[in-house]
Amino acid sequence: MKKQGEKRYDKTCENKWQDKEVRLLQQKYLRLSERTSKLYEQIEKSAQEKQYCETGMYLLSSNLLLSDYRVLLAQEKKQSDKLTTEPFCLQPLIHETEKEIERLTGLIRIMRQNETALRQKTEAENLSLYSYFKKLLEEGNQS
Image (cartoon, rainbow, N blue to C red; front, side, top):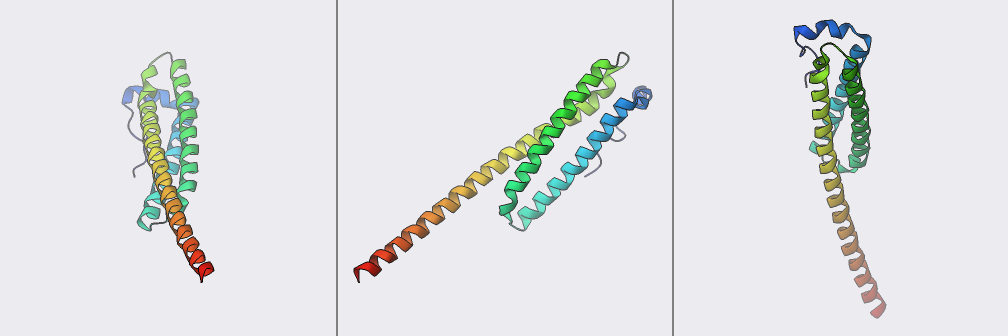
């Protein structure tokens, strides 16, 4: 996955990137983007290896990332309001952050559905296993 946030801003905004606060926001976004990429890679690897037991951990990590993106988005919008000249310079970064929030929200929804389905399957298997053992016990008591 390419580093998002790099080299996508037009020349009219270049002088605004000298602003320390704006640069910090871009760096925060890049760090979050790297963390998100690593999480996606781990999830993909886990799915290929069929290690579904780690879903809870990925769900937690995704929720933490989502929270971090939401904080970053609020900071970006606040900084954008402060830029009196060319406030549109932060719009590409804000747009990318909003897209990441949407992606993570979708991922979290899918993981929750999968976790629920896996839990229901496990509960059904446990119930059928319980029924089988109960039947064996009853047969054993009758003999």
